[in-house]
Image 1 (cartoon, helix red, strand yellow):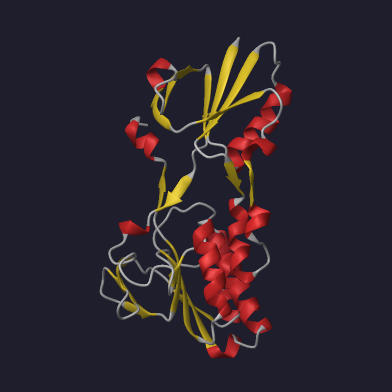
Image 2: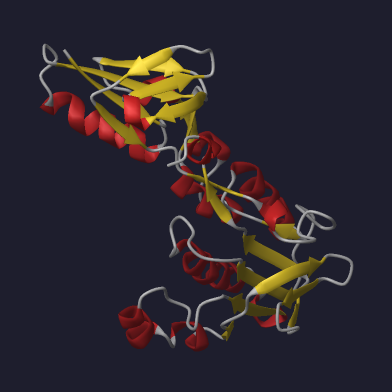
Length: 263
Protein backbone atom coordinates (compact mmCIF):
# COMPACT_ATOMS: atom_id res chain seq x y z
CA UNK A 1 0.00 0.00 0.00
CA UNK A 2 1.41 3.39 -1.05
CA UNK A 3 0.81 6.39 1.19
CA UNK A 4 -0.04 9.91 0.05
CA UNK A 5 -0.07 12.62 2.72
CA UNK A 6 -1.47 16.13 2.23
CA UNK A 7 -0.43 18.80 4.72
CA UNK A 8 -3.00 21.57 4.90
CA UNK A 9 -6.75 21.42 4.45
CA UNK A 10 -7.33 24.83 2.94
CA UNK A 11 -8.57 25.40 -0.60
CA UNK A 12 -5.48 23.86 -2.26
CA UNK A 13 -5.23 20.83 0.01
CA UNK A 14 -8.95 20.16 -0.18
CA UNK A 15 -8.94 20.36 -3.98
CA UNK A 16 -6.01 17.94 -4.18
CA UNK A 17 -7.81 15.45 -1.95
CA UNK A 18 -11.00 15.67 -3.98
CA UNK A 19 -9.23 15.45 -7.33
CA UNK A 20 -6.84 12.63 -6.46
CA UNK A 21 -9.04 10.29 -4.42
CA UNK A 22 -11.22 9.21 -7.40
CA UNK A 23 -8.10 8.76 -9.55
CA UNK A 24 -6.09 6.61 -7.17
CA UNK A 25 -7.06 2.99 -6.55
CA UNK A 26 -8.09 2.64 -2.90
CA UNK A 27 -6.53 -0.83 -2.84
CA UNK A 28 -3.19 0.70 -3.80
CA UNK A 29 -3.19 4.16 -2.22
CA UNK A 30 -3.91 5.28 1.32
CA UNK A 31 -4.63 9.03 1.50
CA UNK A 32 -4.28 11.18 4.62
CA UNK A 33 -4.99 14.89 5.05
CA UNK A 34 -3.55 16.73 8.06
CA UNK A 35 -4.66 20.12 9.38
CA UNK A 36 -4.60 21.70 12.82
CA UNK A 37 -8.00 23.35 12.42
CA UNK A 38 -11.40 21.68 12.17
CA UNK A 39 -12.86 24.75 10.44
CA UNK A 40 -12.51 25.43 6.72
CA UNK A 41 -12.18 29.11 5.83
CA UNK A 42 -12.97 30.03 2.24
CA UNK A 43 -10.28 32.68 2.02
CA UNK A 44 -11.19 34.06 -1.45
CA UNK A 45 -14.47 35.16 0.12
CA UNK A 46 -12.74 37.40 2.67
CA UNK A 47 -12.33 40.04 -0.06
CA UNK A 48 -16.10 40.50 -0.27
CA UNK A 49 -16.90 40.65 3.46
CA UNK A 50 -15.96 44.35 3.91
CA UNK A 51 -18.64 45.29 1.36
CA UNK A 52 -21.36 43.04 2.77
CA UNK A 53 -21.36 40.82 -0.32
CA UNK A 54 -20.38 37.77 1.75
CA UNK A 55 -21.01 37.13 5.43
CA UNK A 56 -18.98 35.16 7.97
CA UNK A 57 -21.48 32.31 7.76
CA UNK A 58 -20.83 31.93 4.04
CA UNK A 59 -17.05 31.52 4.35
CA UNK A 60 -16.79 29.39 7.50
CA UNK A 61 -17.71 25.69 7.27
CA UNK A 62 -16.78 22.43 9.01
CA UNK A 63 -13.65 21.09 7.31
CA UNK A 64 -14.86 17.48 7.30
CA UNK A 65 -17.70 18.46 4.97
CA UNK A 66 -15.20 18.91 2.13
CA UNK A 67 -13.00 15.86 2.73
CA UNK A 68 -14.03 13.02 0.41
CA UNK A 69 -14.76 9.47 1.46
CA UNK A 70 -11.63 7.37 1.58
CA UNK A 71 -9.39 10.16 2.88
CA UNK A 72 -8.25 9.90 6.50
CA UNK A 73 -8.41 13.26 8.28
CA UNK A 74 -6.00 13.91 11.14
CA UNK A 75 -6.60 17.00 13.26
CA UNK A 76 -3.13 17.98 14.41
CA UNK A 77 -0.35 20.54 13.99
CA UNK A 78 2.74 19.41 12.09
CA UNK A 79 6.00 19.61 14.01
CA UNK A 80 8.50 18.65 11.31
CA UNK A 81 8.84 17.32 7.79
CA UNK A 82 11.72 14.86 7.51
CA UNK A 83 12.07 14.93 3.75
CA UNK A 84 15.18 12.73 3.66
CA UNK A 85 13.32 10.00 5.53
CA UNK A 86 9.88 10.45 3.87
CA UNK A 87 8.27 11.09 7.23
CA UNK A 88 6.06 13.75 8.83
CA UNK A 89 6.18 14.28 12.58
CA UNK A 90 2.92 15.50 14.11
CA UNK A 91 2.56 17.70 17.17
CA UNK A 92 1.74 14.66 19.28
CA UNK A 93 4.96 12.96 18.22
CA UNK A 94 3.16 10.53 15.92
CA UNK A 95 5.11 9.82 12.74
CA UNK A 96 3.42 9.53 9.34
CA UNK A 97 5.51 7.83 6.66
CA UNK A 98 4.72 8.72 3.07
CA UNK A 99 5.54 7.81 -0.51
CA UNK A 100 4.18 11.10 -1.86
CA UNK A 101 3.84 14.32 0.15
CA UNK A 102 1.81 17.34 -0.91
CA UNK A 103 2.56 20.49 1.07
CA UNK A 104 -0.39 22.90 1.05
CA UNK A 105 0.22 24.75 4.30
CA UNK A 106 -0.34 28.14 2.66
CA UNK A 107 0.86 31.50 3.90
CA UNK A 108 -0.18 33.93 6.62
CA UNK A 109 0.11 37.67 7.10
CA UNK A 110 2.73 39.01 9.50
CA UNK A 111 2.02 42.69 10.25
CA UNK A 112 4.58 42.55 13.07
CA UNK A 113 7.30 42.41 10.40
CA UNK A 114 6.69 46.11 9.64
CA UNK A 115 7.73 48.59 12.30
CA UNK A 116 4.76 50.35 13.85
CA UNK A 117 2.02 48.48 12.01
CA UNK A 118 0.66 46.91 15.19
CA UNK A 119 1.55 49.74 17.58
CA UNK A 120 -1.32 52.14 16.94
CA UNK A 121 -4.47 51.88 14.89
CA UNK A 122 -4.50 48.16 14.10
CA UNK A 123 -8.11 47.24 13.35
CA UNK A 124 -9.09 50.80 14.22
CA UNK A 125 -7.97 52.68 11.11
CA UNK A 126 -5.45 50.12 9.82
CA UNK A 127 -6.98 46.92 8.46
CA UNK A 128 -6.19 43.81 6.48
CA UNK A 129 -8.70 41.68 4.60
CA UNK A 130 -6.52 38.57 4.31
CA UNK A 131 -7.86 37.28 7.64
CA UNK A 132 -11.45 36.75 8.69
CA UNK A 133 -10.97 38.99 11.71
CA UNK A 134 -9.52 41.77 9.57
CA UNK A 135 -12.25 41.55 6.95
CA UNK A 136 -15.02 41.64 9.58
CA UNK A 137 -13.42 44.60 11.38
CA UNK A 138 -13.02 46.48 8.10
CA UNK A 139 -16.68 45.88 7.30
CA UNK A 140 -17.64 47.56 10.55
CA UNK A 141 -15.31 50.49 9.90
CA UNK A 142 -16.61 51.07 6.39
CA UNK A 143 -20.13 51.37 7.76
CA UNK A 144 -18.95 54.51 9.58
CA UNK A 145 -16.90 55.93 6.70
CA UNK A 146 -17.85 59.47 5.71
CA UNK A 147 -14.91 60.39 3.49
CA UNK A 148 -11.20 61.18 3.57
CA UNK A 149 -7.97 59.55 2.35
CA UNK A 150 -8.33 55.80 1.87
CA UNK A 151 -5.03 54.10 1.08
CA UNK A 152 -4.70 50.56 -0.28
CA UNK A 153 -1.20 49.34 0.43
CA UNK A 154 0.92 46.31 -0.53
CA UNK A 155 3.74 45.92 1.93
CA UNK A 156 6.00 43.68 -0.13
CA UNK A 157 5.90 40.89 -2.68
CA UNK A 158 5.21 38.05 -3.07
CA UNK A 159 1.72 37.75 -1.63
CA UNK A 160 -0.94 35.13 -2.11
CA UNK A 161 -3.53 36.13 -4.68
CA UNK A 162 -1.56 39.09 -6.14
CA UNK A 163 -4.65 40.45 -7.88
CA UNK A 164 -6.68 40.74 -4.65
CA UNK A 165 -5.47 44.29 -3.78
CA UNK A 166 -6.55 45.51 -7.21
CA UNK A 167 -9.88 43.77 -6.84
CA UNK A 168 -10.31 45.52 -3.51
CA UNK A 169 -9.48 48.89 -5.11
CA UNK A 170 -12.12 48.44 -7.80
CA UNK A 171 -14.68 47.12 -5.32
CA UNK A 172 -14.21 50.01 -2.89
CA UNK A 173 -14.46 52.48 -5.78
CA UNK A 174 -17.81 50.91 -6.72
CA UNK A 175 -18.99 50.64 -3.09
CA UNK A 176 -18.25 54.30 -2.36
CA UNK A 177 -20.08 55.34 -5.52
CA UNK A 178 -23.15 53.37 -4.52
CA UNK A 179 -23.26 55.25 -1.21
CA UNK A 180 -22.58 58.70 -2.58
CA UNK A 181 -19.18 58.82 -0.89
CA UNK A 182 -16.86 58.53 -3.89
CA UNK A 183 -16.44 62.29 -4.38
CA UNK A 184 -15.73 62.64 -0.66
CA UNK A 185 -12.96 60.03 -0.77
CA UNK A 186 -9.45 60.17 -2.18
CA UNK A 187 -8.27 56.71 -3.17
CA UNK A 188 -4.58 55.78 -3.31
CA UNK A 189 -2.94 52.54 -4.42
CA UNK A 190 0.54 52.16 -2.91
CA UNK A 191 2.77 49.37 -4.19
CA UNK A 192 6.45 48.38 -4.12
CA UNK A 193 6.17 47.45 -7.80
CA UNK A 194 6.75 49.85 -10.69
CA UNK A 195 3.11 49.52 -11.72
CA UNK A 196 -0.25 48.36 -10.44
CA UNK A 197 -0.04 44.95 -12.09
CA UNK A 198 2.46 42.19 -11.39
CA UNK A 199 2.88 41.18 -15.04
CA UNK A 200 4.42 43.56 -17.63
CA UNK A 201 1.83 42.65 -20.28
CA UNK A 202 -1.03 43.41 -17.89
CA UNK A 203 0.61 46.68 -16.83
CA UNK A 204 0.99 47.73 -20.45
CA UNK A 205 -2.58 46.90 -21.47
CA UNK A 206 -4.43 47.71 -18.24
CA UNK A 207 -2.14 50.19 -16.52
CA UNK A 208 -4.51 53.12 -16.90
CA UNK A 209 -7.53 51.44 -15.29
CA UNK A 210 -6.77 52.99 -11.89
CA UNK A 211 -6.41 56.48 -13.36
CA UNK A 212 -9.69 56.06 -15.22
CA UNK A 213 -11.39 55.58 -11.86
CA UNK A 214 -9.57 58.40 -10.15
CA UNK A 215 -7.41 56.09 -8.04
CA UNK A 216 -3.95 57.58 -7.56
CA UNK A 217 -1.08 55.15 -8.08
CA UNK A 218 2.03 55.48 -5.94
CA UNK A 219 4.57 52.95 -7.31
CA UNK A 220 7.97 51.82 -6.05
CA UNK A 221 7.04 52.61 -2.46
CA UNK A 222 8.95 50.29 -0.13
CA UNK A 223 7.59 50.90 3.32
CA UNK A 224 10.02 51.16 6.23
CA UNK A 225 7.55 51.87 9.00
CA UNK A 226 4.05 52.98 9.89
CA UNK A 227 3.52 56.03 12.06
CA UNK A 228 0.17 55.22 13.61
CA UNK A 229 0.11 58.39 15.69
CA UNK A 230 0.39 60.65 12.62
CA UNK A 231 -1.39 58.26 10.22
CA UNK A 232 1.52 57.99 7.79
CA UNK A 233 3.28 55.35 5.76
CA UNK A 234 7.00 56.12 5.56
CA UNK A 235 9.27 54.56 2.94
CA UNK A 236 12.95 53.67 3.18
CA UNK A 237 13.74 56.75 1.05
CA UNK A 238 11.71 58.95 3.44
CA UNK A 239 8.67 59.50 1.27
CA UNK A 240 5.39 59.73 3.15
CA UNK A 241 1.80 58.78 2.38
CA UNK A 242 -0.88 60.06 4.74
CA UNK A 243 -4.08 58.13 5.36
CA UNK A 244 -7.33 58.33 7.26
CA UNK A 245 -8.02 54.67 6.57
CA UNK A 246 -5.27 52.24 5.62
CA UNK A 247 -6.12 48.88 4.04
CA UNK A 248 -2.87 46.96 3.94
CA UNK A 249 -1.63 43.62 2.71
CA UNK A 250 1.11 42.92 5.26
CA UNK A 251 4.15 40.74 4.68
CA UNK A 252 3.13 37.20 3.69
CA UNK A 253 5.15 34.30 5.10
CA UNK A 254 4.87 30.54 4.81
CA UNK A 255 4.09 28.12 7.62
CA UNK A 256 6.73 27.90 10.35
CA UNK A 257 7.05 24.14 9.86
CA UNK A 258 8.69 24.78 6.49
CA UNK A 259 11.53 26.72 8.11
CA UNK A 260 11.79 24.27 11.01
CA UNK A 261 12.22 21.46 8.52
CA UNK A 262 14.91 23.22 6.52
CA UNK A 263 12.89 23.15 3.30
